[in-house]
Image (cartoon, rainbow, N blue to C red; front, side, top):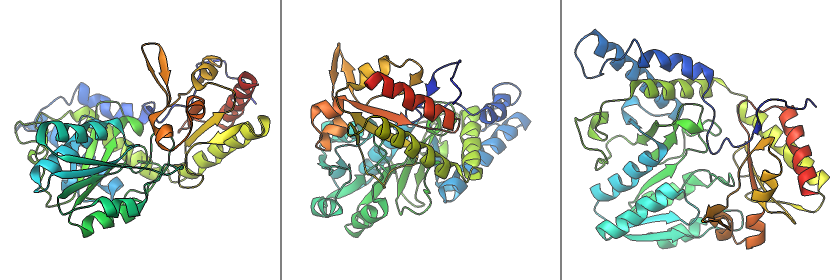
Length: 375
């Protein structure tokens, strides 16, 4: 094993990914030479418009949809808001359904519908692995349900929901289905989920922060979140950020070309789990589904530790916990608590998430350092 001498080993890819140098190289000219407004009728505008169209085609191919079904946004959270608020306000019902372990952007958007527009919001429970029971969704659906929003993969545990089955249940009752796929983009196939709306975020797939996209099924009406000059088929006003749109298109293209990435990440993730389990026998507990999980995510609790303190003791590793720190008080992860785990297990959780640059040496080093700090 080579001992790292540079910056900490980065195992926090679910929080954000580093920008791929190939993405940077492609998008930089659109901050300098190719500065035109895509709506302008001259050469500068035509160059920018072509770049946006090319990026849209790449994202569409990545998602398995038509280019005119891709709406560029400023983030995954904005995509979630456009999907949830847009579909709910354009629909005829007044009931939306989500789940307790959903991303905060989705929960907040649903709560805003309740507070500001009088919608009823149902939050479905999850089991000990973080999965929604399709039977619970079927029981919650009513004739007033306009939208169901359930994330594809959880950002803390990596648990993957049975989206196709859940979407079919929603459609059978006349409701639309949205999924936040920010954590599964580039790790799982998104082309055959059977959903009406799907969110991705650039900074979860090696593009910069500040750009996202929303798949909107053809023919679906949405109330815009940003009003303006009719950009993005009238769904998101504002002059396009051409450089970041190009970056997202490039990131989508790179993800499609990197066919072996999920298998490599799963191998390294499982190696890290094995080493921790072997070095700390009986003390390491997996949080999340053992098999229905994105390939890069390992969330474990180590008996007798606090996750935040353990990470503070290993400055050579950059990772995270699911706990929230507020005014000096550390609170257990709401996701793990909703899964039925006691507070001591939730407070001990480590979220170790791998990425494109992670090596076997990184895994060996991380396992050694975490073992020493937990012993």
